[in-house]
Length: 114
Length: 115
Image (cartoon, rainbow over all chains, first blue to last red; front, top):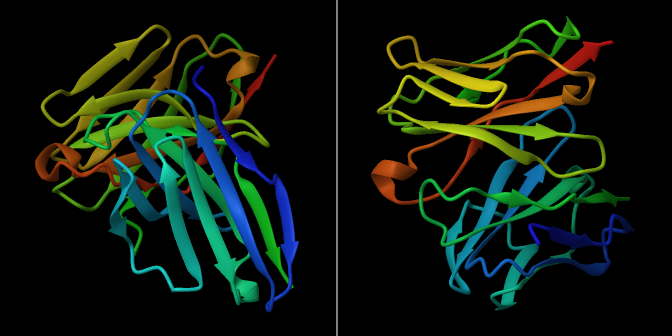
């Protein structure tokens, strides 16, 4: 099983809402990633969890709050988002988070903030 | 500032011919390079990689070439097949030096293989 699943596929939320994105993998990977991809732009790294600990936070605003409850699950909690946060949010996982580990991506959650 | 650039947003190739996708980078500390393929409504799928100690890596129909002095890499697909039609992303990292696995992506090239 080389699949990374993400739910929901689409999400529309208002600026005052609180919502969560979910990512799951069952490949035994110990590193998980959140990327943000805006239209016609490349994916940009937001967070990296390695062995359930946050190892990289690429200066992401606090209205995005990641959580890694266990090695298979990664959540992204959203609160008080802005319309410019509308984007495709991609989750990925890799074996250990070391250089050269292949990152496996999920299909993404397309988020629209009204 | 975009550290990885794919200057051709699209490319069309006849089935059976060679597809050449290009990628340039500005950060000389990058030491690991990858190509990902993306179909609509799916996440990027890893295709092939190369470390900076090599100048060529081949896997079946796919070959990646790295020219460190020009800070340029290319992906060759031979022969091209209609199923290869997708968006191709080039990515790079400093991972072999730093140990971190941050990937910097290019903007992608949409390849269309015409039957």
